[in-house]
Amino acid sequence: MGTKKFTTEMPATDPYDSAKAVTSNLQFFPNPVHDEVRVYVTSDKNESMSLSIYDSNGFEVFQDNRYRTNELITIPNEWRPGVYIVRVRYGNVTEEKKILKI
Image (cartoon, rainbow, N blue to C red; front, side, top):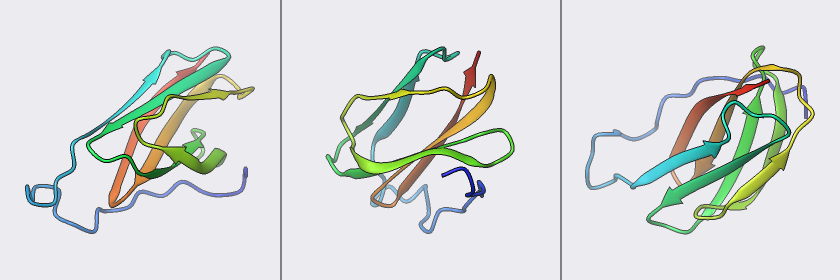
């Protein structure tokens, strides 16, 4: 933790191929974040999921792969105020969104 650098990856499959499409939705709250962030990924499949959070310099500040989609995840944090990227991976899907820590 703390040494991995954030990189942007291109999807391996065509995101517009409806035969391969998976309905999903990455949600987190509250935003802005104070003491903890709650993450929820809705998916038509219940599958293993990894969750990573990166700071504005691209360094990983949190990572865990013990989660599943359709599960509410609460992550306490002591991060500095700033912008962070939440990245979840499950199956062939990778989703990312920004959060603000105040």
